[in-house]
Length: 254
Image (tube, rainbow, N blue to C red):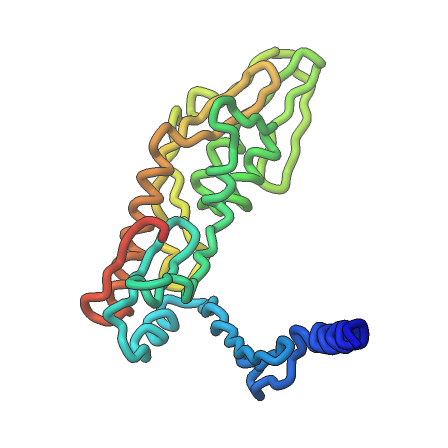
């Protein structure tokens, strides 16, 4: 009889183990579940997913902040390429609303050049880069188009807008260099966004390699940082106008 009792106990335990961790109910929204573990029941509640909203303008960011029931716990952070609202800065800080700040192409073209060496471009490429990529006014580009390159191969070349001239003089020199500025104040926007497209002046060094000839334009040290600070101040002012009164606005990252 003892062996039969042991067998029955083993059967009962096996049946209970087979029912371990079996889900027997789930709420319609999928957040709550009831699980059965043998003869025990356990309720599991999934936390609400963190908010990760994204807006496309400072006005919409302000509109979202103003509709919150308790804006006193909200903190706004902004840096070069993004604005973030931390919706509950007093607790877990998971819920956020972000605004990507789109950097303008002229700014990125200057910023992404190697800082420790010139980026050389021949005359045609350099003039195209100034006029199209940096979107500089025609009058600022004209002085570089007038540079005449005369080489030792019995020809001279003067590149103008839409026109190339070849001659037969042997001069071995570059004419028009004396008219080139040693530095250039380049007006560029930092952002490619409505109401943030103000142009900021970046002072750049103009360099020329007479042997090629080729040209280089590089911002002086600290110039881009000055421009970024000015652009950040503009973003800050618009955030203060758009967000509820007394909402903290910080330049940095959460």
